[in-house]
Structures are given as C-alpha cells and as structure tokens.
Length: 238
Image 1 (cartoon, rainbow, N blue to C red):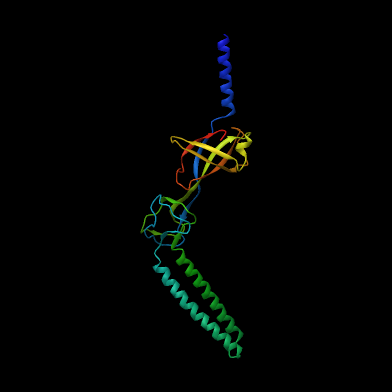
Image 2: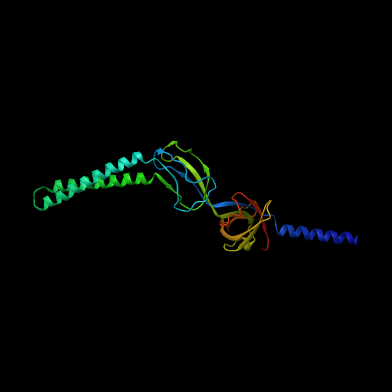
C-alpha cells in the first residue's frame, strides 16, 4: 500500500508538471509575402528568376514588352518639346506686347498638359519593369511567360524567408511568453533542429475559450536552414 501511495504521488506530480507546461505547437511563416500584379497591359517576357532562387530587393524579376509604351513616350516627348518651345516664344512676345495674356496663358496650359502626358508615358514604361520590393524568393508563378496580361492581373507570389515568424498560442498567464523581446526556442518536428528567436509580437486579444494568446517569434533564417511551413514545439526554459 505504501508503495502504491508513492507511485500515486509521483503520478500526481507528473500530471501537475504537464498541467503547468502544456504542449505548445508552432508553425513557421515567412516574415512577409506579397502577390505581385501587373500595372499595365502588355505581353509578359521570360522570368529572370526560377522558383526558390533567391533575389535581392530592387532586382528585376520580370519585364513586359515596352514596344507600345516606348512609342507613346516618344510621341509625348515630342509634344512636350513643341509645347515648351511655344510657351517660351509666347513669353518673349508678351514681354514685347506682341501677344495677349490669353495667348500666353493658353500656351502655358498646353505646356503643362504636355508635361503631364510625358510623365504619364514615362510611368507606363517604368511599369514594364517589375522589381522586387524586398529580398526573398518566388514561390508561385500565377501567369505564364509570353501571355498578354491586363492591369491588376497577378503575376507571381513572393516571400521573404530570410526571417521567419513562428506563430503559436501560449498560456495567457505565462508572463515570460507574453513579453516582447524575450527569447524562445522551438524544436522542429521531424528534424534534429532547434530554432531560436525573440518574441516579435503579442496579439492584444486573448482567446477566452482556451486561455491562450497568440504570439509571433522572429527567427533569423539568413542561412536558409528552415523553411516556411515547418512545424515545431515550444521548448520551455530556453
């Protein structure tokens, strides 16, 4: 009986420990991601990067055919040069009282309109070069090469996995796990790996049904050791 009492006491301690430290599962997400869409209608040229190939912020990921927009830009530039020269002539003529204020104001208006049209044409040309807003990788092509596209059409999806966010729900009464800046370590499922980082965000609203709050832990992944989508389990006390 005494032996059974000791075993029962040990079992109760184990249960208490388990209750104090519930299993916390984590999922790794990219630090940021975006679906890049076309801003003009044109034909899509070959992609510059393959799926999973790393690129830097500002790298050209793909270009669109600029033929039409290059012609429009040249036409707008010629009209701008003409309107500017006409405006300058009208200013000289008005200074000598050889033309009216109305003619001067009209030439200035035409010049400003041509200036805006040129800026718009140059903007369309620039939209034909699609650059990376941040460093990362392409994870999905949404439009095939050489297809004709329209403004707003999704082209591809990119992620920034140089850093990852481990998302997990932790007990709301565990102050250490609910404090931004504290260190957290996760054991990666199915791998002999651990991922360490610091608490980046704590959701301001708790889940009253589970008594937990969602946190995001920022993990450095510059070496590419981890992949977005991996899962893991919180290691307490590390």
